[in-house]
Image (tube, rainbow, N blue to C red; front, top):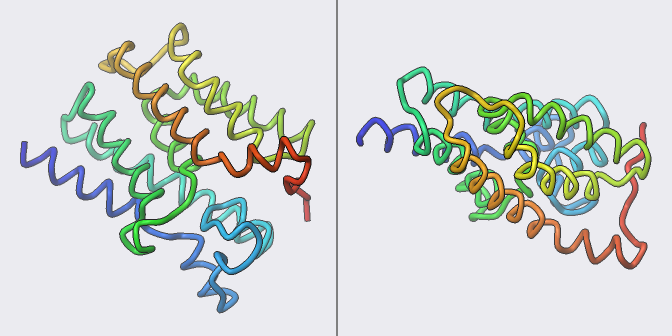
Length: 201
């Protein structure tokens, strides 16, 4: 129990790391939340800081979901407990200890968690994400599509040994709904035709 608690704390701490805010202050001397969409995640970092630093934030946010789950797995934590540690990392990103319990929408960190737990599913989700961005130029729409596909694909695609399929389905469904909920303002803008399109710099 103590081991699980320690990894849960580690996952929340790592998830809470506000990479976009830190990198923005380091390289430009600005808080990216004061610009663009006001979000601390990779998409806004790309818009405000440029491609180089946007990609840097994306990779860092993915890793803070991937690493805690990988370390917990290496320490012998399995099943639903391993999945929950990943969820803690995602919650940390969205309710960051360092940002007065505010944060990003959890897409990149969720990608990191599920990339470790269900890599084949995530490859399809990422492919769908890229396709939607390429055809529509809407990052938010691609994130919503990916979140909706995630639980559906867990029903029939291969998953990591030791991961219970019903459990990962329920968790992926809840996380998919959480990500979609975090995009509720984007959904409104998409419906109104006022959502910002992704522009390659």
